[in-house]
Length: 153
Image (cartoon, rainbow, N blue to C red):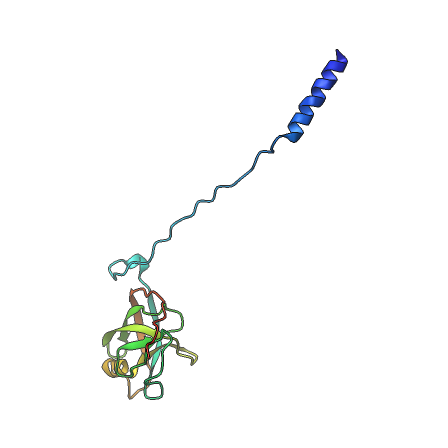
């Protein structure tokens, strides 16, 4: 009897050794992230920045911007270091309360302490050309796609 039990135990152990081991898996739940709303009325996703703006003009006129379009110094565009390209922002000159809607199409400014480089045309409308720089409030209206626009020559 003892011999039969020993053989039976050995067979069970061999059978268990040959079977598949249970797979321990973790189920990851991928969470969908909401894209920020394109409306200023949704305060939860609105981004507001404050800082000093300068402007750039003739030295860059006609050259390609970071998003691939030709820079027009008389246009209503701006350069920002981190906002996605093609983001639409409202820029308010805090010295005179004039505001303007601009599109981010370039990178910069590359001078410490500055948050935005407006086109010459934007600086004229915001009335800070003679001063050179001004304190601004930047409100994101619509987040850009950060896409490079292929320039056709």
